[in-house]
Length: 101
Image 1 (cartoon, helix red, strand yellow):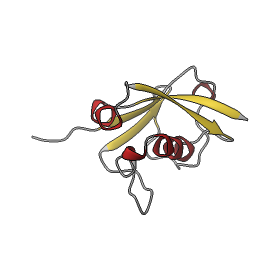
Image 2 (cartoon, rainbow, N blue to C red; image 1 turned 45 degrees about the horizontal axis):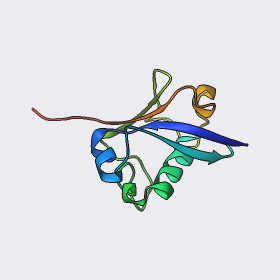
Image 3 (cartoon, rainbow, N blue to C red; image 1 turned 120 degrees about the vertical axis):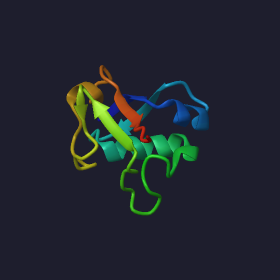
Image 4 (cartoon, helix red, strand yellow; image 1 turned 90 degrees about the vertical axis):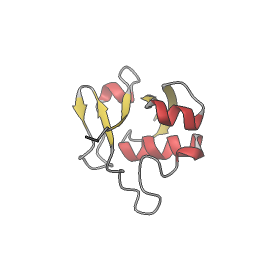
C-alpha cells in the first residue's frame, strides 16, 4: 500500500532543501519514522545527516519528531505511526529543539 505523508519541516531545513514548510513524501508499505526519513533524504539529498547521523541513522540530539499531539522521538524508528499520519490527515512534524542560556 502506498501512502502520501505530509511532513512539516523547521525553517532551517526548509532553507537547506529550498522547500516550503510542508512537503509530501510517498511511502510504500508501513509508515514509520524510518520510512519517512528515508523518503525525505531520497527526495532531498541535502537533508542527509541533518536529522539523523549519517552512519548510525540515529536521531540527532536536537531534533524531535511529533504527530497527533504525541512526541515520537524516543520511540523505535520502526514503530508504525498513527493512522492519521499514514492517511495524510495529520502531518509528521520535524522540530529543531533550541538550547542556550
